[in-house]
Every structure is written in structure tokens, then in C-alpha cells.
Length: 264
Image (cartoon, rainbow, N blue to C red; front, side, top):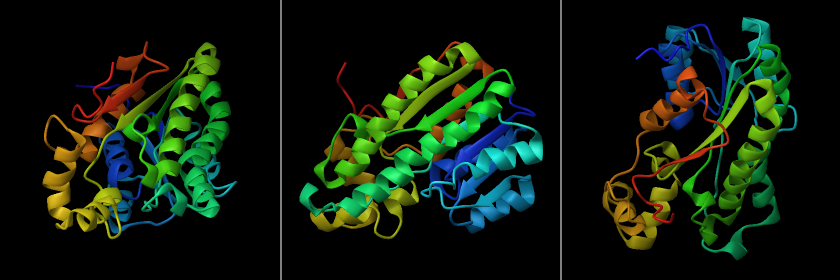
């Protein structure tokens, strides 16, 4: 299916791995001009840059000025911005709420919430100049399903969902749509990498990180499909929301969690 993204200019934050990398790759496959920002240029991102023409900006998106570098680079290289994907996020799971320090709260909000605030603020003039566009924020089911061990991350993602709805109202007259995707567990380094959630769960459950991902977490969270989502599944939804096929969708929050959230 042609999503009509050929020639569009897309900015993706946090595209070095996982969901962001998958989104950048699918956008490039559709013929979009892609600008990716990440603090670390992984081998996978470098390969995408070299083989598929994705522009890479090495930048700390948790800083006050970092996120604005991406729309600026997109405008310099391609003349503007049509799509912004606010994907970057981080968490530092702790045993209890009391273990989360003020510094940890600030770090998680800087990278997970304020990066989106700053990237969006910088991209809006370019989006308006193109006559409209799309912003897709990557949230989390933790916005609805709080966990004291990641209270700071959950709060930051809840703020991001709220921000998306507020922006949808303000930007609609300018032809800019704003939507959020709230994934449940996704098979990414966020879970499977060293020190990731799978290792925390495995330690508590007396099992391996692999078993935690394949069995313990799906059962414990009540994932109806019995498995984690894949990054490419989140990326497919992100591209749909960024495309003209979703031209009358804005202010929405799509949960992609294998049936984990069961409230109406």
C-alpha cells in the first residue's frame, strides 16, 4: 500500500535502536527524507545512514538545546519538516517509589517529556510553513497502568499523552495533526538490553531475562496475545498516523499492547 510519504521530510528522535530505528527504516523505505537524532550512533543506525541515506544527528536530546537541532537539520537539508516523531524516552527502574531520587525524576522527564516539548516547539514553524503535517508521539501503557518502580516514567508518559491532546486542539487550524501511540511491552533493548526491565523482572522471579520476556511478563501483565509487540508493529502504526490515510485522525491515543489494558 502506498502511504504517500515519498518525498516527505520526517524527523525521528531517539532513532538509534528499537522503535525509533524501526520507524526511521520504514519511513526511508517509503521514500521519505529522514533525519534521526540520537546521543549514540549505533552500528544499525550507521548502516541505515550509509545504505539508505538517512541523515543522522548525534545529539543529547535531554538537553535544553538538543531537540531543536533536528528540525534545523531537516530544514537545512530538505527545506522543511512534514512529520515529527517524538520517540526518545528512558527509564531507570527502582525497587520502590522512595528509591527514585529527584535527579532521576529530572533525568527521566528531560529525556521522555521535555525532549518532545522542545522538538515540537522547534518543528511547529516548519510544519506551519509547509501548510500542515503530522506529529506522532510514542507514549506507553504506563500512562494508564502506573507502577511505583517506574513512577517517574509513567508520569512522564502520562504528561506526553496529555500534551498530544492539547497540541491537537491548538494546531488543528494549521493543518497539523497530533496523535499518540501507547505501546505495551515491545521487544527492544529497553526491555532486553543490559539492566533493562527483563533483567529486573528475571531477578525478582528467579528466572532468565529470556523467560521473563517470553513467559513471565506476558502472563503477569495479562497480554492476551501472549507476546510482546515487535518494533516494526509500532512503526507501521506510526507511519499510518503520519500519512494521508489518517487525514481525519488527530488528538487520538492508540494503545498497542496485545490486549493488556482492558478498561473501557
